[in-house]
Amino acid sequence: MTTTIETAATPPTWDLSSYFPSFDSDERARFEEALGREVDEATAKAGGLEVLHETNGEVWEQVVLGYEQLTERLSHLSSYVGCLAAADARDPRYGLAEARLNLVRAGMEKLSTELRRALGAPAQPVFDSFVARPAISHAAYALGRLRIEAKTSMASDLEGAQRGPGHRRHHGVGPAVRHDQRPPHLPDGLAGRPT
Image (cartoon, rainbow, N blue to C red):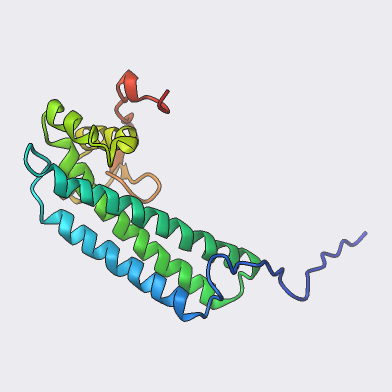
């Protein structure tokens, strides 16, 4: 018995006009280009700041708010490109767009690293005062997670030195972890979703 798999002659088409008029539109191209540029600018700005302390909370608040906006925009563009690539994986334009998005994601990881650097350093009262700010209090849980990651992760400048035999990276990002070591546990208060 022979089984035949039929494939559609044309890929499915979805109305994605709520994202952008079309993939080839100037609006989408400008959005993508601006997103990449702004991620790089935000990372450079954060990298030039001292860690969070009593007198620079306002500037770090702006970094956090900018990070949230960049994350929303990256999600918007990723969703759009993902839909197009799912509908027609053979179109090289979509594969290239996914590759460009991976570069933006790498830039966002660098920005996350700067946030961890800033949030992991201050004394607890300084951090608590920072996350109580009205503009970012909604993000206190997520910022607390970044703080814990900063305190339980290897310094980024040492990560490369630890890569070698017996080491591997999980999910392609993050600090190198020996396969015979367990990751540190989070404190009980941050072990799961906020209640």
